[in-house]
Amino acid sequence: MKDLTRSIWPPALLDPSGLRAAVAHPAQTSGSDRADGRGQTMIIDKGLGRYAFADLLETAGDYMDCIKIGFGTAPLSKTELLLYKIEQAKLRGLLIMPGGTLLETAVKQELVPEFFDTVCKFGFNAIEVSDGTIELSRGLRTALIQEGIRNGLQVVTEYGKKLTGSLVDASELVETAEVDLAAGAKYVTVEARESGVGVGLFDDKGNCREDMLDGICRFVSDPGRLMWEAPLKHQQVLLLQTFGPGVHLGNIPPGDALALETMRRGLRSDTFGFGDTPENRKCIEYMI
Image (cartoon, rainbow, N blue to C red; front, side):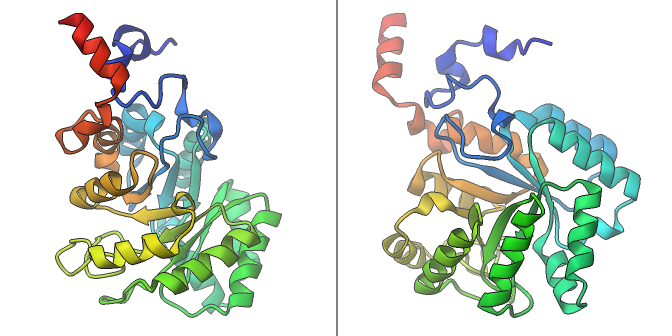
């Protein structure tokens, strides 16, 4: 069925930033780097039912890249429902993965081979390797990344602790990211939990510790390989204003997926300047 939104709306109204004009369907890249220069969006699913999940894909499936079945909710989900979610996400060209806490649990319970076997049987196409709750040695962290790749999974890693008050050490983040990426990880996520409050980059009110962000920017040579957990709108706005539409954002609530896309494109007041290009100004002048 033809997507009429792409044939009826003038391109400068569909995407004032002009970044997506050449891409017919953003999910075609199956979670890899996109040709349109727009960043990745990872959605966190903390327990959506079948219809809510279907609604999410219908309304915002074109504007997402990855769905994370949050923390350890995957084993608690009904098998039929979980299989449905995985199948539908993959049909859309999306990555879908269990939360990193589930792999941490497998490490603690000494069930890592069983974890990978089960993940592959369900059909997940990605995993998250993290140590937000436990301690992983550098050797084990690398081994888990490589095991994921051997099983045909895309690997996203996560830096940071979930304990309230935990901060981001810029030099440690850089060192961890370099080794993770060399081991085969696609992105390194900066921890902020699903709340975005009192951990990592954000203080106990959810506001960004901008001095910390500045420090990270000075240390990190390629911020394009980082994904920032930013569940709250003002956090997304700040990161978009800092890095532009190409910033990778994670732990986005399902109900905010479409709203985030409008900010990436300059279709919302917070990032309206993204549409302030010479081409767009010329188009407006011509219409006037």
